[in-house]
Length: 254
Image (tube, rainbow, N blue to C red; front, side):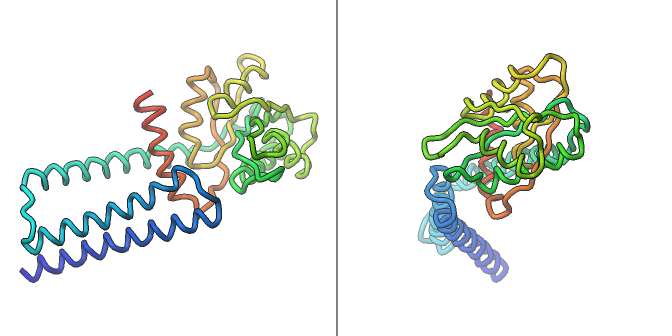
């Protein structure tokens, strides 16, 4: 009985810590980034943890009699969900670990949002990675891809061009694609600016490499590899969770 009580307390503590983390992380996201629809998944997870704590405690104390079949079904559901998430995360992590081809004909730098006319931190990391690749591969041409959002003063492509030039990359090596609004459009519109049968490196953040390469294949790219720029560490929980869901939507259930 004491062993069961200890296990019960440990599991309840785990759920409590998970709920507090999700709520604290949600508040941090609101303060540092602002309100985005996906961020609200974290308070939903927190309230789910609180609800589960209540149900488990009532069951443990004998105040509720939850049918064994329901408990088994719930365990199978949670276990399956965790397994699927682990597999998807493994696929994404493997995708980001494969390095880019050297001396590619083109790199395509995917847009990632601006604040006014300044690149977001995510986009700045992509600019940094692209500039480093271009410096090491002087015959490579860059296509910077991204349109202008409603709260952006210039297009993402223009901001990337300015960022690359500030790092010493000649404007003659940069082609702007400033009409796209999604990864698929980034890659579709950029491909129209290239010759046929060229090698391409897609520059995005590490968490996004696997899915970006999959979309590139769907868009007709053949000789393509990915360059993963650094992630924004405190956004990793959001980015990897959202990316797992996006992989299900775009790859598993296209």
